[in-house]
Image 1 (tube, one colour):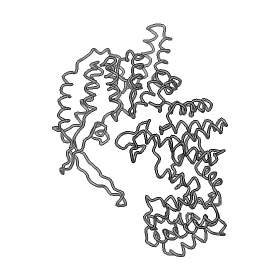
Image 2 (tube, rainbow, N blue to C red; image 1 turned 135 degrees about the vertical axis):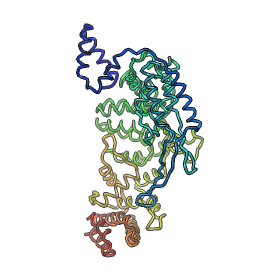
Image 3 (cartoon, rainbow, N blue to C red; image 1 turned 90 degrees about the horizontal axis):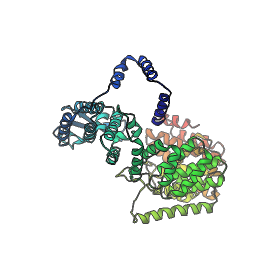
Length: 567
């Protein structure tokens, strides 16, 4: 039960107690059932505390924090490389020591801050939490290397101190709320949410902390929501969703989402996901369609709204809306996976429809490039900052190749594969996915073989298809796509000849070269080739292909075991 519902229920039950004696009797009965280890805490909470100043300890804490920040009080550290089974499997390990007792002091000062909260010296408590939470603690390398810096969260993760970060975050918000009036309170509270320890903390945690209830909550919520609307950090929508939902529920969140669709689109996604979870298909289709109308096409997150709308339309038998919604998903996020969804959405789309979807998506991308002043190399993810919900998705070369494949353009796939001349060193090169694509195109059955199914897994990974929102499995969709993809017979023969030569060479290079770690790769490619040959009409094609490889490498038992797994 959420905090607001719980407190409302408490108030409702309290209102049914007509006399003070009834309330006293209830408290006595509750106290009687409290476990022994919790009785002291219960008695402490019953006591009325007078405000008690903690300014002396605040000054001591402030002086200590200054020494830490200036590097007078430090940790020490040393690092080394840890290797796994291979040269590539390695990691840099840093070990920390705390010769000056920083961890012990942190624990003590956080306990003092908590005591200040309970003694109602909220200003001192708030300043303590601010000083401690913002510390950058230097760790000097004992071998003279570059020093490291740790924050409180990293001190905990490195086991240099044991702290309840969730409780600290809640009391930080609580003491700050109590220490400051509106409007000063609002930006001070918001500033904490940039700290890692606050990533799972919100205003409900603040309201349930401390010993005194917070006052003027309604006025605070109104000012808080107004302030959050104007912010644009990676965490803004999370706390805005919580505030609006606390105040007005799902319907209030929907209204807020409509007003901030292009500033905080995550609100719309939250509402639509709730409708999806509750299986309110008509409502989801209606509000999803409205969301697509309100949200700007160039936002990547709009893809989620579109795909949920398509799911709802499918559930309600509205295939036209489903197709249009999937087109909108592709416009906002022009990936091969979204293109694949349009091609396989039941009734599907004609090639003219697909052409128009491609053109529209390209126009959206082109407009965004112009808006960004043609910034070369721009990508959806900005590596120097946290991604934001309003970010644009920039189509990649992998997306474009995936789309060419889904359009049945085998010549381009074949051409890209032939850029790799060597039978070894395929990792990170297109041929490692291109060969499975060509094998799948040639396969004439329903992908029944175990080896060809692994090829489908490679293709699914390359185009980025993840089953969401009640979508069909990839194999089911791929079979539907395959049935509508026509490849000329002469092209098939040329591709088969290329694949036979390429896969034979790869098996020879891997197995003949004794690359035991890659035997599984050679085995599944060879078996998949045999399955494709058999599907194209060659009798016992798989058995012959496998027997050929076994005859070539009769003494390679590990390879024999790998390839026989596909029989």
